Length: 280
Image 1 (spheres, rainbow, N blue to C red):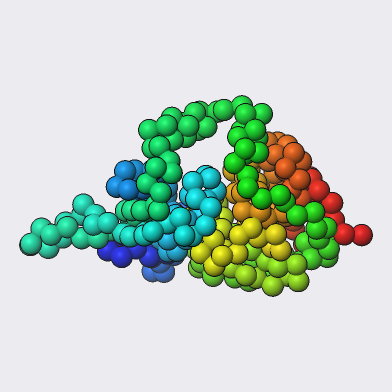
Image 2 (cartoon, helix red, strand yellow):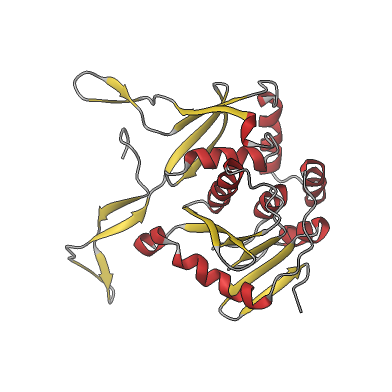
């Protein structure tokens, strides 16, 4: 896939195991696309993430908003792909890999990349939970809505999300995030090999549509709920997060301190309510 416009999935030859034996198989397997995306701000590298190609502009906007670097879409003057370093053909000309995205901010001094790298390194190396939550409180711009959600709606949302997971049906190996209104209608659903990227794509879409804070929406995840995903929801003003898998201890603590309604193990008619309240 290097040197080409990237795809959300790829087809690969395989051999299948059956009853302890490898057997010949003429069928191919479909796997989720995974490529690096380097996000630059003003020509300097901000971060590199492994993502499924597609909706990269939304991903960049969502990431910048979730990290507290931008408030609205107007804070970004331009987001453009840069030429890659892959060469092809006898000319040896560089082709665009669509793996480099340069963002120009309206305020060129909005973030200090040198300090930011230190902050990101510290976070990745295990900053304590209390410090993480304190930083989130300082950066959160919107009070979270105290709107109890109907338990019957909560039970329906994971199935509604699955209906829109087209790439998952092809590959079986990709996460999804979706924003739904209180009537259960999907506003936007995005898929990605990275659960954080899927959430950023959803939030980036809402930002570009001027729908933040999203006080009237519920964020639904096909994955577990970690601190980072609770953080992204809180930064976007989303008051309810529903995950089909488990919640981490720091996610629960953060949800309780920020007032976010956090639900995990939402499968069929059952779910766990970790934080917040639901409608009677």
